Length: 160
Image (cartoon, rainbow, N blue to C red; front, side):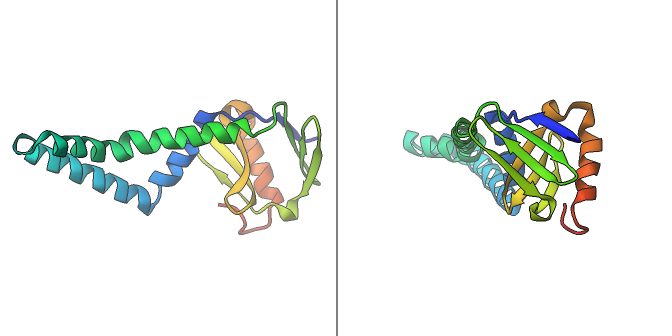
């Protein structure tokens, strides 16, 4: 095999990836605008409102700064719990190989939909929005070479 890794993903890794997705889109911009507007409204009206409205202000400010990230993290923990332990993933000229205790699978390069490189991860997409996440911790010093190798195996125009 050209590259072989023990698949290690943590809830924090998935959380970071989800937060990149949220705040790298128009949804994230709306979240930021809403939060800033609520902070400004709270600062302007804090002394003039009753305790119930103050609680609503605090909840509104907390919605995208505390509640959403906590919910995304809890979802990430559930997703990581569903991943088999001891999974290995390998890459060679024929394709991608995934090995668990109970099952082996092989994906040819023409079935891989793309690759995405983030600051702390590389994602190999098997279908749209689903794939294998390889963190910098797993890839180590091979990250750039591995990325170049996978890109060379994918057809032109199929990677990000």
